[in-house]
Amino acid sequence: MGSGGNYYFEFNNNGTLYQVWRNYLTASAKKAPYTLVVIDGNGETLVRQDAQVVKN
Image 1 (cartoon, rainbow, N blue to C red):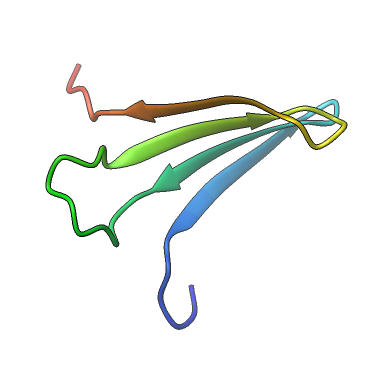
Image 2 (cartoon, rainbow, N blue to C red):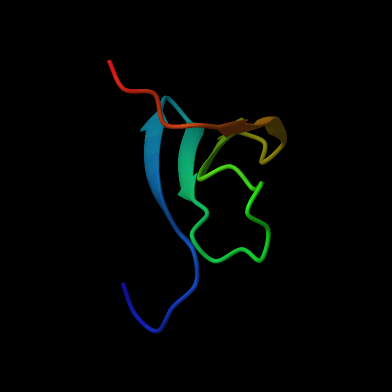
């Protein structure tokens, strides 16, 4: 992973990018641990949604 910084998983579905960011470098205890980002084929961000871990 290199020399620090947040990391993310990226999925590409026909040009639409889905990124799941792990927010482990944050000063706020209230910051969600993950963020979903969806980017369309033109590079426009469609969704930026914080997420919590849910145990099934």
